[in-house]
Length: 200
Image (spheres, rainbow, N blue to C red):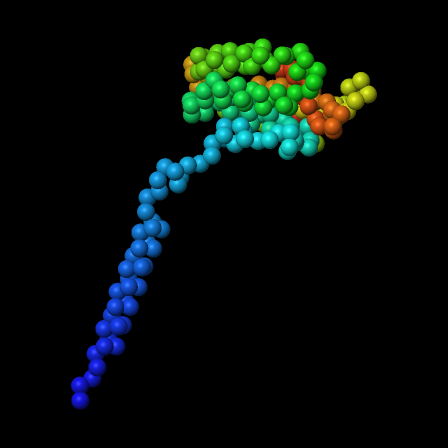
C-alpha cells in the first residue's frame, strides 16, 4: 500500500508562505525611509507653535529660558531658511513675554522692524548667538518694584563672529515684574559686567 504524500505538500506550502511573509516584514522594517517619514520638527516650528498664553512659564527663570530659546533661534546660525514672515512671527512671540509698560514703549511695528534690522546686521557681520545660559534658581534676585513683585535674572550669551572664530561672552540682567494675572513679564534689561559668581 502506498503512503499518501499530501501532508508533506501542505507542510511545504506553509513553510514557503511563512518565508514569504517574513521576507515581506523584513523589507518593510528595514527599507530606507522617505523624507516624509524622517521629517523632524525644527526648533523654529516648535517655537512658532507654542501657545504662550495657555502655557505661560511659572517662574522668572522659566520665562527667561523660553525667551532665550527665541533669541537663539532668531540670532543663531540656524539653517538659513528663516523667512521674513517667520522672523516677524517669532518676534511677536517674544512680545508675549513683555510687560505692558515695555510694550507701550515699543510699538509692535517699530519693535519688529528694529528686530529685523538688528538680525540683518548680525547676518551681514557673520555674527551668531550660539548659546544662552540663564542663571540658576538660587541666583534670581527678588525685588520690589513700586510695591509690586519683581525679579532680576542674569543671562550670559555665547557669540561668534565671521572674522573672529573665537567665542565672546556677554552678560545681561533682565528685570521682570509680576502682572495682575500672576505672570512674570519682562520689564527691561541692561548689559552688565561678568557676575562675580562666575569668577575668572
